[in-house]
Image (tube, rainbow, N blue to C red; front, top):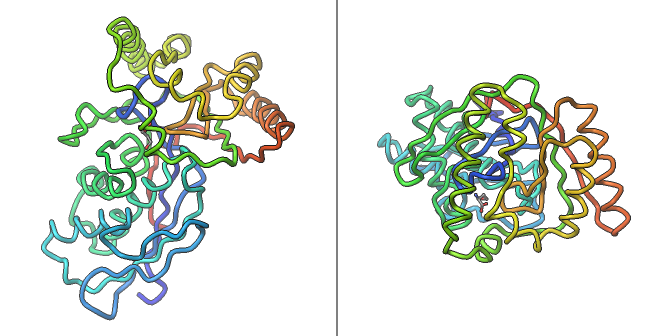
Length: 310
Ligand code: HSE
């Protein structure tokens, strides 16, 4: 297998407004590409990383794709298997689109495929989550599990990797804008207070429960009503340039909601069709350009495939 086995792992939107660290969904693109092939020496070796300005470590133990893959190999008792891995970053780092999570998902998926699928995709989740923890030092599967499995994922308990795939309402589109400013997840986590006022906790719980119910019943009106984040957005908005102006543009042009994607600076909203989404995205992009900030945007239905081999 000279050319290697290639997988694509998609970007994700974590938190989905009201589910900090416990809710996320996958979008179609961007995403990362991981290639694995038979190696020349004992063990897993990362031979190449392309597509990122920031230098990512080639050391397996320090790399999100490498570490998760290594943990999987150890679990299978195959850590001496000679395997080479290449990582091709096709999405921005520190963007709020789950860049390190996509690499972690791609790494474990590629190894499992290479070994002719000793584990089910669902069983790979814990190794992918461990891989991503190398990036921000925290264990949370809200990017990595939807990138691996696709769809909308609710994590009941991050410590025990207990998660549930939530039904995807047909027709729901997500639009995402990525302003070219970098926010590191570690920093965006550090701004959050570790205490939550009881009143806010109650409102947020009501919204989260109702949002999940809206997903199960495809009740778009309930989904829209529930997407009001009382805890995280107010604390992180200051990190994202012109956040409230952009939110106002999106909401007055047909978005169902508009908030920060993961740790930011990307932002996302749901809308009823791609025409509404494209119109909003053009307006957001033009507003950011007026402020001297370049941006990229993406629109997709919720990606139910997750990571795949091609
Ligand atoms: N739930 C995480 C956060 C996602 O918002 O910090 C980013 O990794």
